[in-house]
Image 1 (tube, rainbow, N blue to C red):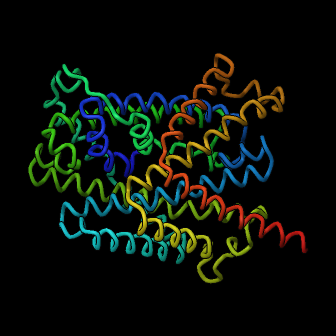
Image 2 (cartoon, helix red, strand yellow; image 1 turned 180 degrees about the vertical axis):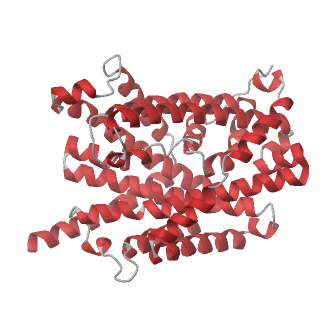
Image 3 (tube, rainbow, N blue to C red; image 1 turned 60 degrees about the vertical axis):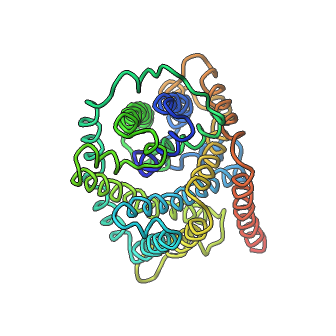
Length: 407
């Protein structure tokens, strides 16, 4: 979860919410908790992998299950494309050319195509790349918070003048991008020891820690930087003011490692979604073909890398981030709607071991309303992009169904 979002969002949120930004991050964390709790109960009914696609299939059948799985795939690809822009921004702190349009496009092309080739050659190369990028990702951020806390004053935490937020829903939708990703662990739940107990506890604790951590980062960000700089700055500016050039370099490296790790992990795992859909007969067999030399799902990787490249070259970070958040909100909503069905059909032994939420359906209903409220504030362009990509997915689905009928 602690990836590109926290490096990209501070300036965008401060520009929209001003001194309320830290509390908005905290509030978004509590909103996400309701969704996480609902997904945690869903996870506790299953021992197998699959995540949202599995839950939707069990509740509503293969067609809805495919649509949910495809939407989750789209959200991952859009997020991947958005994060290439964040990489360009932080590389721009080292060389300003990366902040130009041409610089952004070069980063998108090099990252998307480079990581695609690495993963086609073999999963071992992808894992090695991920391990390198993950090394010491969070340590510089923790040091930034610890050093920056001495600059925090009461005026930042409790401002005397509280501004109004013109687009609270849209701002919250953008901010949610920093919290998405928790559902990734659900996809591989079957590989986890005692998933019915481990997964729910891990989800809740992770989101609580991430919320508090983000809150402290934004408090330090606003305390260290002047208001005019905070509206357009990055965490590199905070590092520079706290520790000079060494601090700027440390945060730049943390950003590159974090974003690089996020991108490497995404291109490693996201193509496996279309591979799995193909193996279950829900997408054309082309997506399931394994490279004869490298033993990798080359076609799925190439499709994912190509789609991410197109999205990255045609959309801005904010547009892609909102689109990614929108698709995940739709995915969460379908899963939450399926919870009563899954509860009803669970056997007594499963019900006894499940992570049952107190208050009946109060938390899931609240989570569903939150999803609808945030999705309602998405832009028309984001809805059009999601609808278009969903149509592509269903076209592939019906193509495969037609092939199976002929057989």
